[in-house]
Length: 213
Ligand code: 5GP
Image (cartoon, rainbow, N blue to C red; front, side):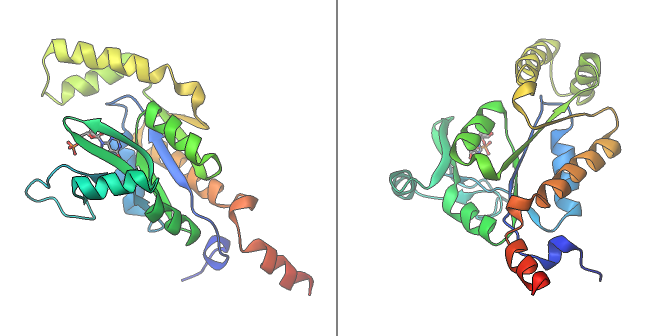
């Protein structure tokens, strides 16, 4: 198999953040990206919640005790953490930092608030992409198409979607998802281009040194 430049040279990984209002296709695009690209993996959170049946430690979450979670907070081992429904959840930092050094990328499927927190902790490694629906009508149709929610719930989800969309200008890239395959190609091109940034290509200095003799 031919190796391109990004395979040959050492590089620092990145934190690739996808945000969108629910129903705009973020989960689909995330799955497509994870399926198509071996160098990016989904960030796995730590939680004090007990595992549900079928969930695998280290895959769905890192399941940890309260004491272990306390210790991780104490050691500043979280990018961010929060209480949700009586349990604690957080994004562990040590594991990701080691991966970044090895040139692995991490995908985050999080909202604008989580994005802000990650950016505050690690601005230089973070790349943010916002996915917009082509119209609010299309978004509503996708929510209705799931067939799981009442009109009332859909109205509330639409309000939340408007609030999420209002943060579009805080993102590095914005892609309109009017066609999921075309949107995926654009998101993948963003990832590829960001990997080629000079500052991420840590192998360039020795490479150029060798080049110049
Ligand atoms: P569940 O227990 O159903 O897997 O997740 C419950 C909630 O926790 C979801 O809304 C999910 O977004 C949130 N959550 C999962 N991981 C994290 C994390 O690392 N940080 C924060 N702040 N919330 C998380």
